[in-house]
Length: 145
Ligand code: RB5
Image (cartoon, rainbow, N blue to C red):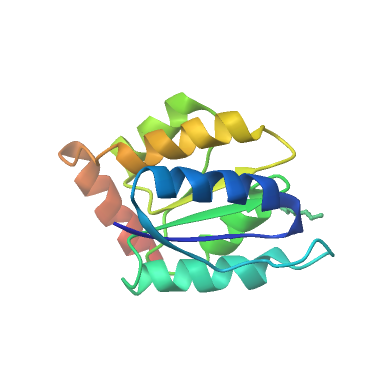
C-alpha cells in the first residue's frame, strides 16, 4: 500500500503522528506538506493528495486540518474520491467496510494525536466488505456522472 498524506497549518502535529504510525506499519508514504505554520489554504493540500489517489498513483490518502471538514469537502470534489471525515474508531472501521473510503480526513482541533493514531491504524488495516455495499458504491459512481 502507498499512502499520500498532507495537512494545512492546523493539522501538522497529527500529520507527524500519522507519519510515525506509517513507518511503524512499514507502509510507504509521501508527505505533501504543508511545510510552514503560517496560514495556508487547505484546498491546495487536499487537491494533490486526492488527485493522486484518484489517478492510482497512491492507494490511500490522509488529510488533516483544524476540523477535517475543509479537507474532506475539498477531497470529495475530486472524481473517484470517497473521503471520510472520522473522529471515532467505530466510524474508522465502518467507513472502510461499508464505503471503501480511499481518503481519511481528521481535525486536529477536534481530537488529539493518540486517538488520531488509533483511528488511522484501524482505517489502514480494515478491508472493504463488498457484497451489498458494492451496489451502493456503483450508485456513487453514477452520481459522479
Ligand atoms: C484553518 O484556520 C481552518 O479553517 C482549517 O484548518 C480547517 O479547519 C478548515 O476546514
